[in-house]
Length: 402
Image (cartoon, rainbow, N blue to C red; front, top):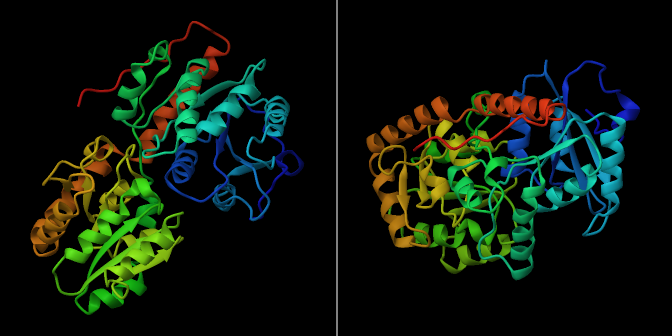
């Protein structure tokens, strides 16, 4: 399907009384937040909610991956062209689109879309909500300031919907924000996991030779802790070990150099961004997430749903999913020695590994499906749409006790 950048030229919005929601995401890559948007839109009840997936394209080049993938799945899309860091012209474009297409709700994801969206809906009847997907760690001063300003801006939005209890608890302490908050836990698209029925032939060849595959899927950036994973892999003493790193990011060259320095350049594969990540995932013996900060990580959700054992850093976002020695194993942030010990424990004990994988799969399929997440968002959209007509509607919801 060809990506349409002028939605109104190719199909009119329907005349039904569906709730019209404009999702505003990032123009770069298909990472956790972008895949989250895809899963949400896919599982929202289409008889009630009409979705448009959009981005603000702030530099020339290839078409944004989020809109391209949304169009491939049959969703309506819109690309707002506004080159430059500030993308101020996008405010006017958003405002006109909201007016011309009677958008009821603008749903933003990230500090830049929060700010531009907030300014665009001023003076309109359109409601705006934000889903924070997590904050940066070890960030530069400029990014820290942007994210702090974003949290202050939340008080001016109609709703803020963190996707983990940890993010909720961090926001509920901010003055004037509590009644704007609603917790909806992250969910994984189980249909996407199930659809990738055939494991990757590329990796099956290695497994057929008795190889043990450790995997990582995600961005190659400092907060993901991949240096720790490489050092742990280097210490690991099991026959046939192999590390597959799936993803792209600013740290790739540095990580490839580190693998060479450690003498692991023949046993570590940097596979880049892959459309077939789920097929690759299903060949992993263990998936490792060594992050320093996460919401509820999508890669853990997908791995557990696919019945792959997981090892994760002991941080709040991971602890939502991983009960140590039950649904996965935990290790301390930056502790490559501890990670090596846990890798050894799982890779040398297939029965223990399978037990953990089964328990993790049962948890995710029971409590963290994208379908369940989408139904909760649909309820929130209904409440906000009603609130546009009845200003006394409350949306406050506290997180369930853990």
